[in-house]
Structures are given as structure tokens and as C-alpha cells.
Image 1 (cartoon, one colour):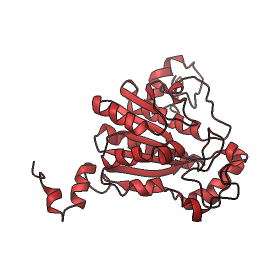
Image 2: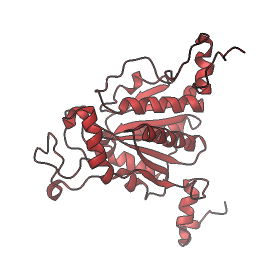
Image 3: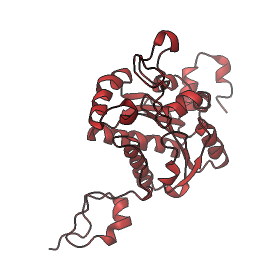
Amino acid sequence: MPAPKTPVTLPDYQVERIGSQIKEGETIKSARPHALTDAIFNYCPGCTHGIVNRLVAEVIDELGIEGKTVGIAPVGCSVMAYDFFNCDMIEAAHGRAPAVATGVKRVHPDNVVFAYQGDGDLASIGTAETVHAATRGEKITVIFINNAIYGMTGGQMAPTSLPNQVTQTSPYGRDVATVGYPVRIAELLSTLDGVAYVERVTCDSTAHIMAAKRALKKAFQNQIDGVGYSLVEVVATCPTNWGMSPHDAFEWLRENMLPYYPLGVYKDVVADGYANAAEAALARAKDCPIAQKGKEA
């Protein structure tokens, strides 16, 4: 009996796309997702942006949503994300990706809208947009890359830089007595009633990469199901501005970043038994009479 022409190592969406191109006897282990263009990444060696970009594209392919997905590109190392994804993309002003995503989603509620942001973009100049989009419960998906430094602009201290971490603007280490403590975005947003799902992941190993993909897929699925605002924080490396090799950067991430930014699910209203963030918020305010007005409606 002849071997099947399409190997089982390819996911179904890849078989449909390139199955006819596979020659008899060939075994294809992996292929570029359709939602990812063939443009060459401009990220530094060892940077995990490229991994996350691919995971997002794989999720878009698997969910079959490329034709109705709109991505919002930030200012930062991923400023050229519009070159890397085959879906519609919009470039936002620095920190304003959640505001742009809000506008797109409200005008086109049937579209799937995601914002892709770094820590300087999301947690510094875009803090207000981030918090208010979350507390409003905007039905968007946010992908947050936390590498504890400003990457594109040369390695300045970011809101997420660790205590005593040396950067271009903290040459003696971050002094919490004068500049305060790092912002833990996952923990912060998980306290807001408008938020449906928050998870922190990383991409330092195969197991963690697969876990990151599951989190991203859940965040996109939540939007499709109308559950509410979802954010996936990816603890990432920046070998160039950390002044390390890619290997050493991953070791530094494990030794320093993961203890300060623990991985895990910080909020999941569906797992808690609610249909959406609004239902969870109503339950949380059960002892507040004014908050229950209109409940029966």
C-alpha cells in the first residue's frame, strides 16, 4: 500500500494549503503559516518577537480568521509588524494601539482585532489607553511583549525594568527609591472588571512555546466568542540591549525575570464559570444594589 501523499506531521490547515505541492515520499515537518508573509524579520538574533509573530500567525490560520482579522502595529521593535502579517494591519501612534483597536472593533464588531505591543509602548506612554480599554471591557486581544527594556531606541529603562537592572538610563541599576518599582501588567489588569482573560507566558523552551500558543489561541477565541478583553503577556529577551548572547539572555530571563514575573493565568472568567466579563463583574458586585440595576433586562 503506497504511503499517504500528505504526512500527518502537518496540521490540517497546512495540508489544505500546500498538500498538493508535496511530492510522493517527501515528509514536511513544518511550513510557514499562511497568515505570515515571506518578508524577512528585522528582529535581532535571539529576540523572541519572531517566535511570537509566528505563533500569532499559526493561531490565525488554525482559527480560519485571516480574512477578518485586523492587527494594530505599535511603535517599537515590532513597528514593522504590518510587513509580517497577511491580515489587514494599521500602524498606531506610540502607545495608542488599544485606542485604535477600540475604534476598529466598535466600527467593525464582526472583525477580530488584536494589538501587538512592547513594554515601553503599552506600559509607559500607552498606560492610560491600556488601562481604560481593559476596564471598558473592549472585546479586543492584546499581545504584550515584556523584555524589561526599551529595545528599538537603544536600551533605556522601561516601566518593566527590574530593580537594580542596568540600562542606558540607569547605569548604576534601577533605583526603586527614586524611580519606583516595575509595573506588573498581568497582575494590574487582572483586577479590572472589564477584563476576561489574562495570562503570562514565555518562549524560552519548546514546552513554554506551546503553552504560549495555547494562551494566544484562547485569547483570540475569547474575542470570537464575545467573552471580553484578553491580554497575553510574553516575558521576552533582548540580547542586544541586555549586552548578552542569546543563550545567556535566556538564562538571565530564567534567573531574574521569571521569579519577578511569574508565569500563569491571572484571570479567566470562563474557567471561573461565567459566560463573559460582564457577567463576572455583576457577580463580583452582588452586594452593591445600584450595580445590579438593569440586571433583569
